[in-house]
Length: 334
Image (tube, rainbow, N blue to C red):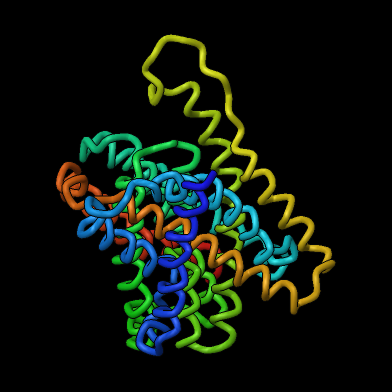
């Protein structure tokens, strides 16, 4: 317990630092969240002074990547309501669902069959691109119980391609490459960009109507995280992910169930806006702790073992989201 407390305090210091850095105007303008900064700071620690630092921090670091992470995902539900679904109509919901499903299935097939990547890295990278970036990677990692460096690799691809998209989409729209009205452009951004921060950054550059639809559709994709985790958990039992022949016990990711419960509770507007802001800020800090701890378990030599294949996979999904997502929006909203 004492080692846990020391490790938690150690991780909190990194999370506070990441939060402070994210408030610097340069990082704000790039819409770089404290979660991303946290994992970078953690990786710097892992690849520099970690070997010379006492191991008493390890228990708290491990606790942050498991329990703190699950708590953060549950409280993430306070950012959403079921009313969000009504605001964009059945077409917006359907587009979001198709993007999530096709992106993950495509990523899994290419990663396993074409690139010959290991299954965990493939699932994590595909989930990050398909659903909601780093948060999806973290939540999926909790179900897979995979090694920390694989999650860090997946998060890195989200950062790179999500940031590129954030600048690319407004540029292409203003150039007339994307022939969409404001409502459709908002749906397109929300359905295909990786992180919530990326969606906000790209859509606000194009006006209030675009931003409103983009954020709502993005939140619908986030809501799909819980059913995705439940399906993934059941599918793992029946797949070759577990190679032993003993009967596997089905483990339900209860944090995903609680996530949906929180969304339902939040849909009734029981919590005043003032307290919602505090809850969401606290939740961001918890997720920043989890990301920082994840980075602390990720060393450069583990990246070398995997190579460039995750980047190839993420780049293919990046192209699919731009092209496939565009034609989906044109099909349903033209």
